[in-house]
Image (cartoon, rainbow, N blue to C red):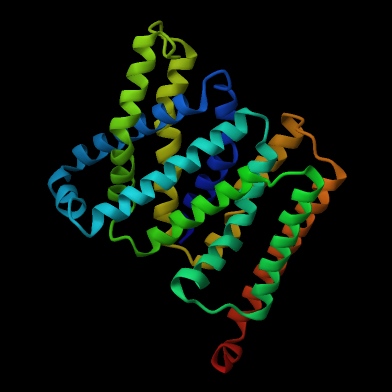
Length: 295
């Protein structure tokens, strides 16, 4: 279990410092970064499967009518999430991207009710309402929806919902998801290079290393997280997940000096209060089995 905890912490810390990595590539278009992220991730995962000599097993488990449609959808959702996140970071919206991942667990619970017919307790409904109030407040204050945060929260929640019933493990699943996006991503990158507008330089520059290395920084925390999720309790995963958006928020405010006005602080404060209530209620519920039998 201790190894699982360290894997989870490692994954969330890596995700927490992601903004620094992508900021080093802020002169590269988000679509191009996504292309390199997908292509290099798929190549890296392919090397792992080749090393383990599991291509036959991978094909048998993925290329069928039941599995393929699920992973086409999860691949698209993952691609949209990655694209919006990178664009948000490099456009100076790190704080708003962190808001998306603070909201994410509340959206996931709501999707559980809508799509899986799960039941929510009154306190959980209250936290969803608080999140809605926060989003409405931020929309009124700034005159527009916090679309970056909502897109990140929604796509990742839908991704998690589909993965909950998906048949493949972490390695096979992520390989399939990147395989779905591999051909269009590779074609896009080749077109950019042929047109002379691509960012890859054939001189061994730091930018080349960062673009190619995007696959490693993408797949490593995902695989670490998958190992952690199998060996530690779900409540611990839920508690540790706030390492990443907290680090992203602090990086945005303290390192990159993104504006954090009183109005924005109020909106974030409502979200944070909702999360505190959400996890305290869950903790109390787990400690009182008698309450569970009543409902």
